[in-house]
Amino acid sequence: MQNDLTIIETPDGSATLQKANTAISFRSIKGAATESWHVFVEGSHITKKSGHWRVLELGLGTGLNLAKTVEAFLNCPQATQLTYTAIECSPLETARFEQL
Image 1 (cartoon, one colour):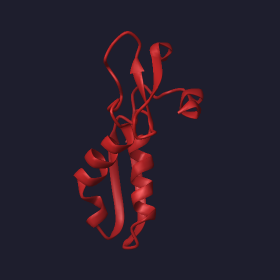
Image 2: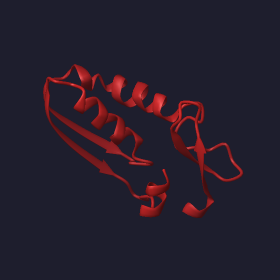
Image 3: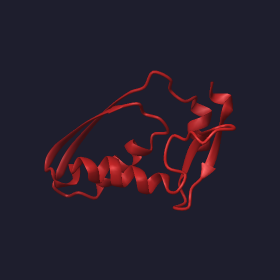
């Protein structure tokens, strides 16, 4: 249920979602964008790859990993193409994405 998700602004200026009355969040409440960059982009070593980047994400969540991957791709001159596939069984509503 998406009605029980609250937008939390994190110290790095990015946002994540937290389930109401719990400590469960989509990303770190200490820095959602920082976590996404460190774990997803740097952790995959994709920025060291030239040519065509192919990414599969299981669970799109707030789309932050996608955004950080696109950012890395646009700043990586040796990358020529990006194919990003995300599989999400419970996608957020469009209005929620717009809020984020």
